[in-house]
Length: 114
Length: 115
Image 1: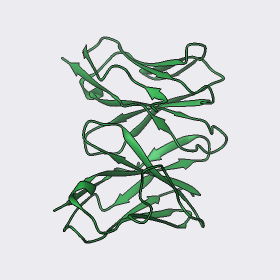
Image 2 (image 1 turned 180 degrees about the vertical axis):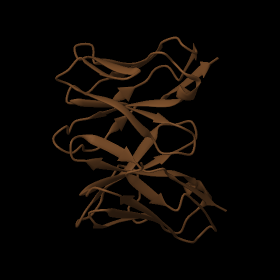
Image 3 (image 1 turned 135 degrees about the horizontal axis):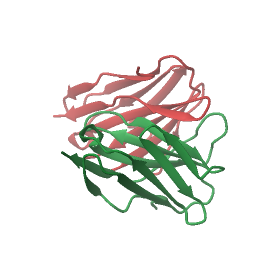
Image 4 (image 1 turned 90 degrees about the vertical axis):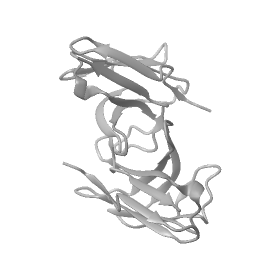
């Protein structure tokens, strides 16, 4: 069964509003989670590393003030897309590494900004 | 800078035959490699992995081969089934440890298995 969940699976919002996406590790604790973005027919692009109890680490070119990440507990990380624009429309995926060496991915969230 | 490369964007194989998906990497610090399968609008699903201390790992129909000197790995699927049709991503990590750190992904190969 799924070990990493994401909510919501799909969201449509109006330009200028903010959207929060949750990522949960279901049966293990994850001190680190990762947020990816995937454009059509392209690879997964790492946006940021979410660290429990500390600030997230953002990849070059990713605006930290636009993509707010909060890793409030060992099983939950949230990504908030602030002041969303149509170009933010994408498929967002989170992942969490389980002790023992396997990385599990969430099912993804399809964001559409109108 | 693409540190993990999948040079074939697509592969078409007949059902029952072997599918071979290739992956090359440039960073010699990578010590753990993974293959993921992904359907449209879904998150990647873990398939199989291999540590740099091994050259082969097998799990059912899936076998991953690692050639460290060539910085090359491949995923073999035998026999291929129509349900295997998906995008396959190769990924590498520098943080094998007890918990994986960030993964570096290739661009993926679309596998199509036809009856």
